[in-house]
Length: 199
Ligand SMILES: C[S@@+](CC[C@H](N)C(=O)[O-])C[C@H]1O[C@@H](n2cnc3c(N)ncnc32)[C@H](O)[C@@H]1O
Image 1 (cartoon, rainbow, N blue to C red):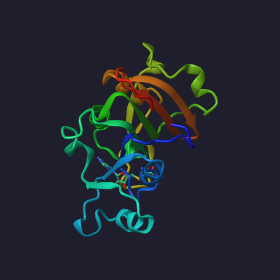
Image 2: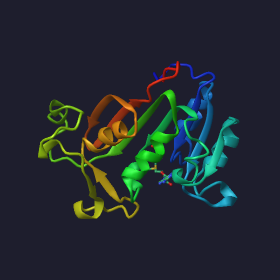
Image 3: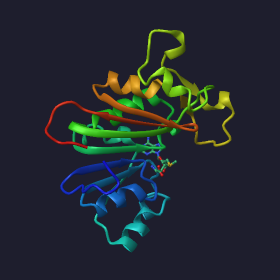
C-alpha cells in the first residue's frame, strides 16, 4: 500500500484505530473501512475522538467499540488490508492477539503491524541477523513483560523481540514479506497466500 495508491473497492480494517487517522486516510482513498477499538463508551463510540472526526471529515467509516477478540469470528477472512499499528504492546496475550489479527486477513490480503520491540541491539545491526527466527538461542521469538523492562505507561503490557511478530504471523499462515526497524519500533508486512488481490 503506497502512500498515493488508490484503495478503491478494498476492504480495510484498522484495529486499535483510536481517533481514526489511518482509517480516514484509507477511506479518503476509496476503501470500505471499519475501525475497531477496545475503548467502549457508547456515548462517543469510545473515549477517543473517532465520532467527532468522522463528522468533521464527512467520511463513511464504520466503527466498532470492541476488542479484536470479540469480532474475530464475524470478520474472519474479510479484509484485504488490515492495519495493526501500535496496539500489540497493549495486549496481555500478544500471541493470541496475533492469532486474532491474522484471522481477519482475506486470502491475498495484507497485514501491516507496527509495534514497540525490546532489543539490546542497535537499530542498524538488528536487520543483519535477518527477519526470520532461527534455531539459535539468540534468534528465538520472545515477548517480555513490559514491567520487567521499566514501562512508565500503565497500558503497556509487553515488548516482543525482533523475531516474535514474524514467527507468530508465519505460524498463523501468513507469509512475511518485510521486516524493518526504526529505533524501538518494528514494522512488519505479511500477506495471506491465495486470492487475486494485492495489498
Ligand atoms: C497507541 S494507540 C494506537 C492508535 C493508532 N493505531 C496509531 O497507530 O496511531 C492503541 C489503541 O489500541 C487500542 N486497543 C488496545 N487493545 C486493543 C484490542 N485488544 N482490540 C482493539 N483495540 C485495542 C487502544 O484502545 C488504543 O486506542
